[in-house]
Length: 124
Image 1 (cartoon, rainbow, N blue to C red):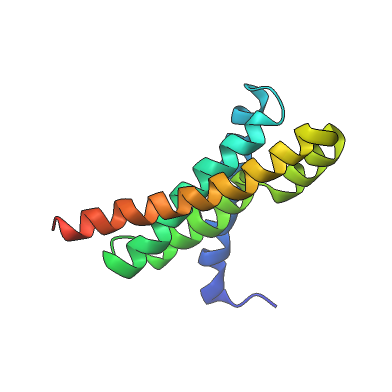
Image 2: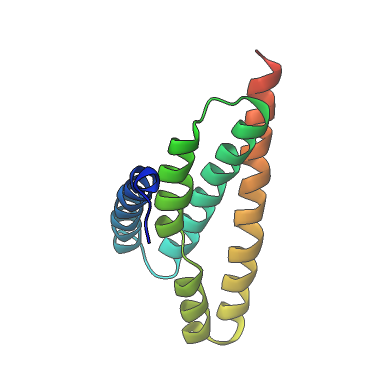
């Protein structure tokens, strides 16, 4: 059962999810597979890292914005399942490279996002 006070939160998540899915399709369809998946995973991790650390260091991003863009947009923009399927279909050394890139680059992007927010908070 959905409670009325949660309806706005769910609408924000749904709106963000729609925007994220459309954005992922736009990026993925304009690049050669599996590059599109890697691109959205890195960009999404960078932005999610920035949002996560903004909450800790700056507090500019509201809870509703975090739901819309963190849960909704980033949840549908980034994709682990597509990464898994693409890695499987690539096979061999291409699959190993794809797995390594999709595990290390998004993690590095989170650290970069964190660093950006820490620098912004220090310059305030």
